[in-house]
Amino acid sequence: MNTDTPYKIVKLTNGDDLICEVDDHDDIEYKINFPLKMEVSSMTTKEGQVDSLNLSRWIGPYTEQSFFSIKRDHVLVIANASEGLGRYYEHVRRQIIQLDTPEKRAILDDINDEDIYDELLSELETETDTIH
Image (cartoon, rainbow, N blue to C red; front, side, top):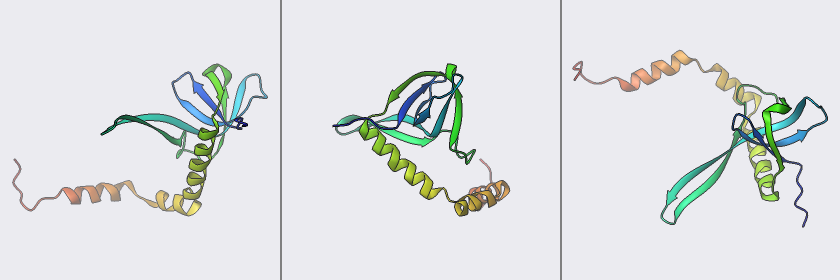
C-alpha cells in the first residue's frame, strides 16, 4: 500500500498546524499552496472523550490567494500527511472552493455593519420602557 500523499503537515513556531502542499526550492522560504489550519477539538459523549479534527482556511477570508511564502525559520517540523488525512484535506478543500464563489463573496461584501447593528438592536427592543 502506497501511503505517500503530496500533502504535508507543517508545524509553525507560533503553534499553528497546517496541512498543505509544500515546495521547498528556496533556501529562505517555503512556498505553500492552499494551507488549511488543523485544530483538534474534544467533546464528551456517552462513550467518553472524542476528538475531532477541524480544517479551516488559515488566512482566509482575508485573502483570495492560495499560495503563500513562509520563512524557513518559522517552521518547526514538516511531515508527510497520512493517506486518510490527505483524503479529508481534499474533501474540505473541494467544499471550500465550491462555497467560495465570486457571487457569494459579493453578497458578503454588500453586508453593511450598520445594518447588522440596527438589526441586533431591534431584536433587543422590549415592549416597555422600564429598565430593571
